[in-house]
Image 1 (cartoon, rainbow, N blue to C red):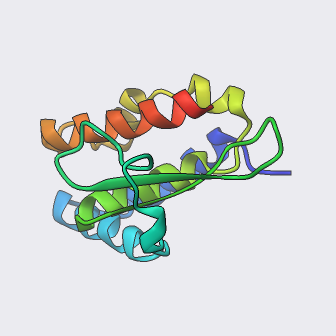
Image 2 (image 1 turned 90 degrees about the vertical axis):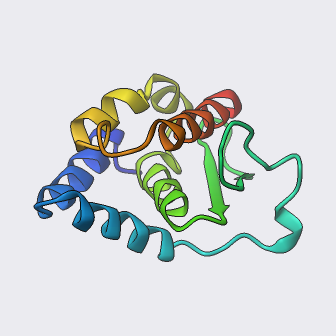
Length: 136
């Protein structure tokens, strides 16, 4: 059985609470991005590319039981790869219904990222979430 979104979110929130300022949180997001495996070259296709992101972003959806969503992602920008890692930690392997109910805006606000991310990065993140929800 997988952790619920709420459990995962609370774990991530505790992690972010350890950092006093935005530089430290940004560094942590970048470190999270370094922890995910890069996609293979053949997975970086026009089909897997996410539109609406200033950076190059790819999301690949893996085979999973019918009510679960499994995905991986990659980007050519360190901070964006970190944001992908955050989405993977929060959403990968969850039931489709939990993913459909997910609000990235609420999550950003509760993590304190809403004011720290540029509007361009936020729009890119919204595009990633939109793609994930569409598949879900």
